[in-house]
Length: 96
Image (tube, rainbow, N blue to C red; front, top):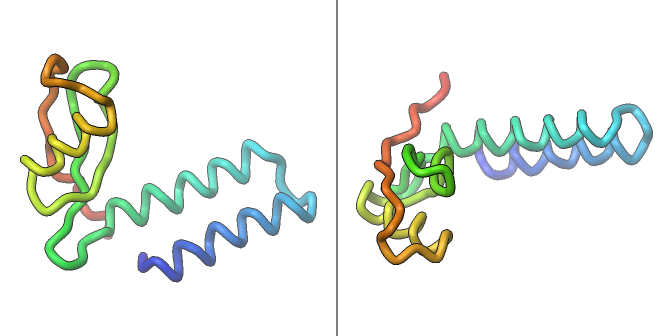
């Protein structure tokens, strides 16, 4: 899914919420689904999506980076971690 498609799908979820066709929880699920699809299909300019596995604070976080090492650094920066957390970084498989 490209960025424009993702934005259109988020807009559709917002419109459905504003028009009363769905409740907030449904709109949130739709937006999360769009973001997850976008992240798992994201590959541009050598960047890929990476997921952290390990300590609770890091586990499940997904970032975009050009390498596992950079992904680890980004996660540590996001969590304001000085290296105390224990986690590994793995590539997120693309959805087909």
